[in-house]
Image 1 (tube, rainbow, N blue to C red):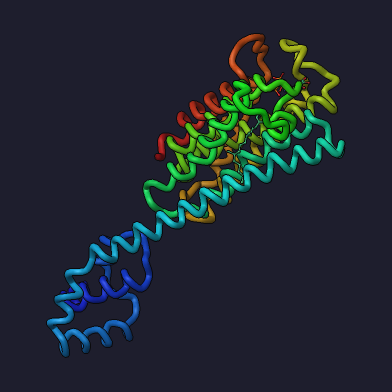
Image 2: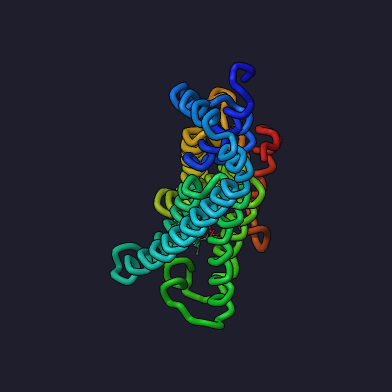
Length: 311
Ligand SMILES: Nc1ccn([C@@H]2O[C@H](COP(=O)(O)OP(=O)(O)OP(=O)(O)O)[C@@H](O)[C@H]2O)c(=O)n1
Ligand SMILES: C/C(=C\CO)CCC[C@H](C)CCC[C@H](C)CCCC(C)C
């Protein structure tokens, strides 16, 4: 850094800010320029017109404004896109159920598996702004409002009821589906894409718990000794698929650089979370906690204890 005249460094910082719109302004102000061509070019400019360069030095707030409005547009666009995606998913499964291509119970579980996983899969399209998580959380929040309005029968929407309830009663929207979107909001705001805790917990709730139902209904002949409503097929599937989806999602987010993981210890930790979540899901819960609350919460606690808090 000492090799560069201070004026040239500031000029480069401002020029690169306007040209690149990268997130950290401070970082760019204190890093040497990357291109030697750019440096010599700017040094020439600076020596020719010091007055103009001083005027440019007064402009960082403008560059900052460009960054902020860029993030705002990106986050608002991403939110709209994901809201539309959620609408298409629910209507699409209603359509498949109406045409009797799939049963209502399968549609409900596929919406359960896909909506949360696709929602997480969309997180990288949000900006690097600190507010991005709140924009993302708007999507389950809007769905939460939708479930409340229809669950309380203030408005009737057959599509939503057919694709996400078991018996087709509006009040069912106020249980499993509502808890599900509340957990999406909680995890988004608390952990976002920056911590493995939220990613693993939501993967267990969406992928693990969802597959336990699908496999348990089809192949669940052998029941678990302490719970005649659950089967070995359901629980073993939950453990294996929950583990695989969690690891896959962690890998996906690590590709974007949101966190770096030691894969040997990560695999052990994810296996622990999957095991604890599967055990909790297999317990008898007559009138007790819904799986959409117990599975993500116990996964968060176990992941917190094994990964440590990485907000
Ligand atoms: N470990 C598991 C989990 C579920 N199932 C089967 O999957 C179906 C649904 O289970 P579950 O999700 O626990 O039922 P509910 O809580 O009543 O429904 P939901 O969670 O979908 O609201 C049942 O046939 C159950 O036997 C299973 O065999 N083994
Ligand atoms: C049936 C469900 C739970 C019962 O166990 C899931 C209910 C899902 C909600 C009605 C819809 C949630 C939508 C997500 C917040 C966003 C999905 C976006 C994506 C791009 C499809």
